[in-house]
Length: 385
Image (cartoon, rainbow, N blue to C red; front, side, top):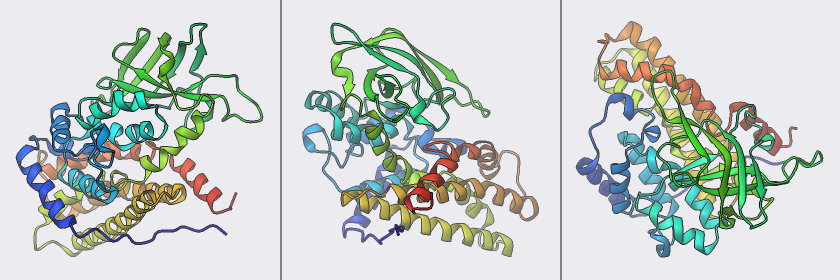
C-alpha cells in the first residue's frame, strides 16, 4: 500500500556561509516595508527589488548558465527562499516566474522559447502569471472554457476569461490552460493545451483588478476577446496541457511559502512577549515553533525528492494542507493570547500584523489548490478512494 516518504535531507557544508551572504545582501538592499507587507511578503510586488535579486544571481539560480541561471543546487535555492520570507522581503513580482513558470519553460519549451524568456526572468525583468482558474470552474481545472481555435495561417484565436490571476497587471507573460478540442465525455482532461501569452502586446486582452477586503490589488481577471497569438505561442505539445499543468503543482505546493505566511506574526509576538512572558504565551510560542520546524523538515524533504527526479505529488499535497492549517491557525491563537496577556496599542507592529492576517489568512487554503482537492489527492495516493 502506498505511504508517505519524508526522508531527511542533509544540508551541504557551504550553507551557513551562503545564508550569511543572503542576510548581508538583505541588510544592504531590502527596502523599508510596513509590518503588513512583511506578512505574506511573497504576495508583495517590488519590481526594483526583484531586479536587484536578479543582479545578485538569486532568480533562476538552479537553471543552466546558458539561460542566465547559476546552476546551483535546489537546496541552496530553498535556503534563499527561507531567508527572503523570514525577512519579509517583497518578492511577489518574480515569484511565480522563478518558482514554476521558468522551470516549466525549461521542461516543455522549445529552444527559441527558452532563449526568449528565461534570461529575462533571471535578470528580474520579466514576470509571469498563471492562467488556470476560471469563473465557475472552481478547483476543477478540466472544466475550463477558454477556447483556442487554430486559424488557417497557423495562428490561434483565444476567447474566454481567467480569474484570480495574481499580479497580472505587472506581468509580461501568462502560461494559460486553454481547451483546443471539444470536451471528450470519456476523458475530460484530453484536448487541453497551454499557451505562452504576451500580456503587454497581444490585442484583445483586458486585465481588470479585483480589490480584496484589505484594499489590496494582487488579484485580477483577464479577458481574451478574439486575442490572436502566433503559432510559436503554443507551449509544449498540443492536447497535453493537462499533464503539463499538473506537473507544476508540486513546485507550487511544497515550498516554504506554504507554511511561513504567518511567520511575521510569530516574530512580532516573540518581540512583544520579551523574556518574562506569561506561561500561556510561552506555551503558544513553543507549540508554533515545533510545528514550523516539523513542516520545514517535510518541505525540505520534498525539495530533496524533486532534486532526485522523484514525483512527490502526495508529499507536496500533505505539506500544503498541514502548512495551511498552521498558518491559518496562528492568527487566531495569537488573538486569544494577546487579549488577555499583552497590551496592544492600535498601531503597534503586532496589532497591525495580526489585523491583516485575521482578514487574509482564510484565503491561504485556496491558493494552489483547495484543502478539499488536496485531501482528495492524498486519499487517492494512499489508495483510499
